[in-house]
Image (tube, helix red, strand yellow):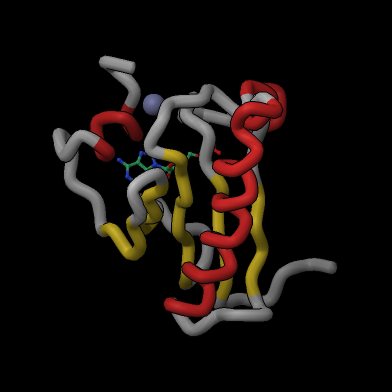
Amino acid sequence: MDDCVFCKIVRGELPADVVYETADLLAFRDINPQAPTHVLLIPKKHFTFLDELQRDDLKLAGELLLAASEVAAKLGVAGAYKLVTNCGEAAGQVVPHLHFHLLAGKKFAP
Ligand code: AMP
Ligand code: ZN
């Protein structure tokens, strides 16, 4: 998507503090962190949100989940993080490119 902020990061047109990258995925630090560790994990391919994933994307969906665990381990927060995706504006989604927030390093409410 030409004017999508996260697609621009994928294309290298906007800077990002990248912490993890594969052929299909990218993780970078959130520009406005809500926790000491706040990383966004995205597929490089543009999907607006989770509901756009199809059965054909099963491998990518699985890779996203495993990557979240790998990113957490890489950042030293394995077993101590929250993984969140906002699906749609009503849920608070602001950037319309599928992303998971990986948050850690502070006490979260149960
Ligand atoms: P959401 O409300 O789930 O759409 O979250 C979007 C997140 O993207 C917010 O936490 C923003 O701080 C973050 N964000 C927006 N633009 C950038 C950017 N250029 N680099 C890193 N994080 C960003
Ligand atoms: Zn995009």
